[in-house]
Image 1 (cartoon, one colour):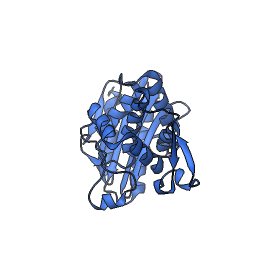
Image 2 (cartoon, rainbow, N blue to C red):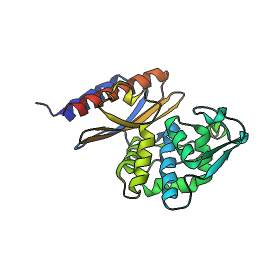
Image 3 (cartoon, rainbow, N blue to C red):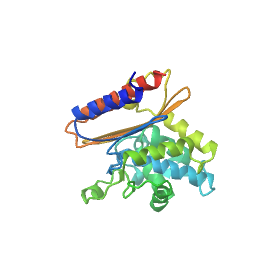
Image 4 (cartoon, one colour):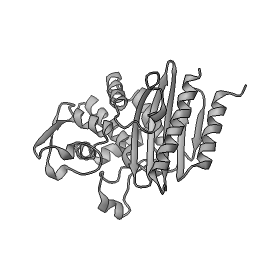
Length: 263
């Protein structure tokens, strides 16, 4: 009987051959891995929020920042795109923990920029170096289209994304309570239409983070069932139609769901 990881690998390669856009993929199974251009740098979109999350919790546990610290949200701070803070009154205030949560569960861009300002771009990039994220660099705030037009963008690779997921799940750099908090935030993700979109989430634990831009569709997830854990990252760009990227990522999630339940 063909080993089940070989079946999964064949399914994924067939999907990629027929798929639209430029695809990068990194999947770590309990005893095997599947990699397709996983070390290639892509525009990070909202996946850049993962190292921001990690640096936030590092600074909290080192006492450089308090999770209950109040951060004002001024009108000047607000940016568009995903999130809810841009719709609040001009005198809103949020805790650091609230900003970290909103940055992930609704991909709030205003929360992300406030955290980048508070943590420091150099410190976030220092976290990337600490975790050996070779292709990841925070170069601009979210929704900074002037920087983007000038060719300044944030970058990440599928392999680096998986390193972030593994750091959240089991990196010794973080205390248990920090890892549990980060996992809880990812597990409460509100955008579950991609990798978890066809999973049996009543059985399978998922903790994911999406990213999207015109022509770009990303998702990554920690997927767990009983004693098995999968770390997955799917990055797609050069899409003429974003829907095609979403559909492809859903199919990857479907195959991973079948793999982990077929124990």
